[in-house]
Length: 454
Picture (cartoon, rainbow, N blue to C red):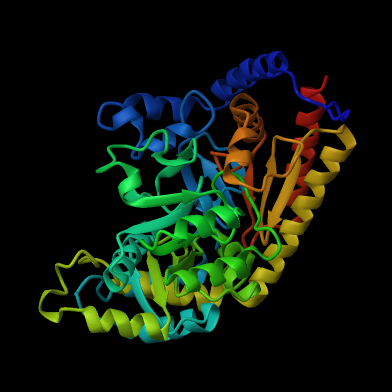
């Protein structure tokens, strides 16, 4: 149905993309030189393959990142709304975290012994998220992987359940999708060890009927859920969804695990605290230590009791949970400083207010140009999506994706000093994000909209 909203033509996107690629090459000769040489030792010229996903003929190499901006090797200052895709939600190199980490570096990092930071950090995690027992890892992927193993162990069940187009790091069981109603490995899943249907049930987010049906099989150890989808575009839960998710899992004897790694953007205790969720376990990773690798998983009293009953202490070091560097003193010191002095309640108030300003600016551009787009905010995280209807499932979000227009918008922003998360049009606010930074994005988006519809 024609609603009169403006739709951007493919030919116009291709024309502007050619111009922006030329502009990118002119702006970034040193990055090109470094990238050309990097291929001598690095696969694809980058230290991690997903770095090839940035717009442009090669990635921009950065020199310095401080607060909410970074400077690339060609001397350009970029206002950073990517923030390490949440890893730098604190802003880059926050002073309290740097000070705590520096002090810890000089006094020992890895000893296989606990440090004094562990207890205060654990208590702060309980204050924020409500669960009383915590363990620490090196990433959210590790936290999710260990949690899944523990859930299978104490329930005696073999499968987990995730939502279509979820993101839980590189955990084998979660790189899944739905094809004709059946679980399948997601496109690009590298070397899955077994067919995904052997380990995982998959349903659409917000589809409670499908959730109830799949839990009824009685073989699901845990539901691993983001409170809102974030990696396919922000997909919010419909009213009552989380109440029913909790009810259905309890009735099925299935544990509920909430992954707050991205939805920590909602506030000091993430979506869980803001909306009063009652998970059995909770996982979180990159944002809590100011950019230093870490992960954490917490559990209720009942889950902790069941885990301890099943633990064989003589082989606790080789049971598939943990690692030599897990819970290391550097990560704990950084996380303690970050949570107590950087990502404070007051900081979140400011970050969320900047998110509201960002959302309003994008909505104004959409309205003024009558674009067939939507904008959605989740705390201090904001996403604009290239479709007229706000999606309610992962599949709807994926179907609305326009790869050509998305790439152009990222490159257009980058060429004008605005860095967005590379995989979709997502922006994150940190404590240093200011009104001028948000307004600069709005101005560039308005310029892009004018050119796209010319």
